[in-house]
Length: 247
Image (tube, rainbow, N blue to C red; front, side, top):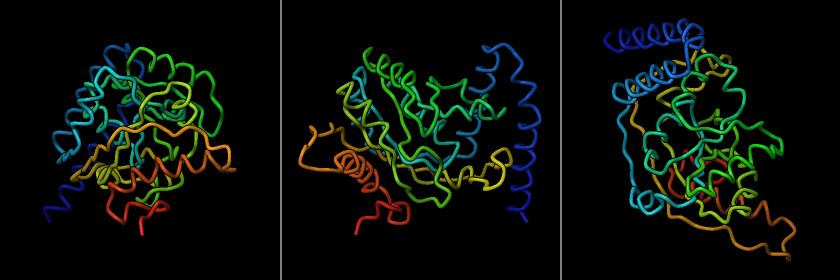
């Protein structure tokens, strides 16, 4: 009975937020940012039990240009990682479709981000990301390009390789578990997703740089993506590893 009441409260909360979202979006940006920041803080405090390992790798990258790459499970990934990466001055590479949704567009106001057109060579976004890195700040990319619908890793795209090669920045892998339970993906309507209480585990991996191109390898880019994504998979439980499952 208690679980049904909790579920009902969560659904009411999300319905209220969805109703208010279009109204909030017409307010001045500074007010939207304040409301979204408070809402994010409330969600993290009320719904999330957060466990983080590898903080020492974050500390050593403060003030240094870094490309963070993470698996992608939920629309809450950005809010969780923004909290963890505050001191690393990170900007998120965010798909333009997030701006079209009244709810996700509000929460985008709480994070530094660069809009990018998915599945395309968005040169403008790459140039902006390079500029961020040149100032000693950081970028976060979800190489899979979209949230996994199964809760396990899907094939990564090679866009982050170009940025890594142009900037010479170190890459730091991040493994996420539990955000798919915090805000489960709705297969039909992203706007109808409902918050749940969840334990979220975030594991930070050791920084690395991509190897120089091996001209004897015909599929060098694919090899590099595989190597980078496996560094994420190695920190995940087997059920999260997906196409990068470690035998």
